[in-house]
Length: 238
Length: 193
Image (cartoon, rainbow over all chains, first blue to last red; front, top):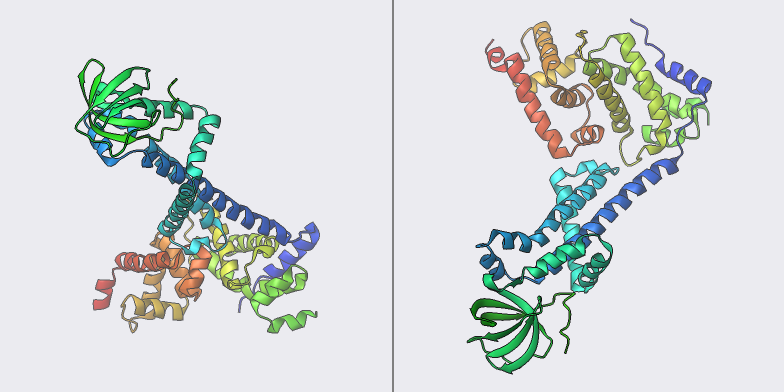
């Protein structure tokens, strides 16, 4: 019978000789806590991204996108909210990756982890939006994030294309159920007419978006008039 | 606590004690030395001396990180995980794989043969050689799962804890591993012998 090597004895001698000690438990606790913190942070940031996306998309309607399909440049501008999807995906990946590295994270399939992360961000985003925080977040980013204001300006200017059938501005004067004067984003005054009947008089200064066609110099025939919540639209100088 | 009293204690209780009482860790090393040595040799196809050196590193690393042991897991899964990680890290460093012969236990041979529908009544030496050769040629991702299941006798949940993969993935690796193993050793022809 072959003699078994005494590896345990050798390891014991090495431990004593080198004075090796086990790492304290708080080191592992700290590592685990850091992973859970990273997970929560990623879900929080992902939630903010989702809230911002919901906020930006809530300003648009599907038929506007369908109209913009005919103009690739316009479609690109209107698609800016969807660029946040890439940021949301990055945060979701970060959350899933942190969760996978926790003590028991490996027991879930990668798709489950990603699903949990996306669902978590969507939930946080939904709560932030429904409580009005997405609006504040958009304004905050406009003040603090470089280029964010420029991108937002590009989106707003997408509505300064009457020749493309998109016009936005503030109601200058309500003339009648089918006519009002509009001061657009460039400072031009338009007489907006249409078969569209307003349920109630449009208040002066109200920001609106108009879909329609140019019917003459300074005249725009509206197919649809909608209120607009453009955050930084200047009020007209009345 | 006297060293003799450790003999009756469960691995998990010894691991919890090992941070304060090194003698408890000695007992754990004694319990796992032979098993891990066999596991390392088979997985890495190393000679005895190389495997002993690797196991020494595994025991040292496990001692340093004993505070990371999760008492809700089985200690066997935790120590096999450390051994597995060390072996894989070594495996990636070596470009030329050694071809050292290793023992294949009889009961493991019978379990594998029965699972892949090989005739268990065929010549044991031939069967053993076929199985050994088949395992040796198997890609590592399949071999490590089959080794842990058939040779180390670990349950699927424990293998999941060792390899840090979901149970479903372990099941898939086992199924594909058995298929690949059968193709290598030509199970269909063997079953006709």
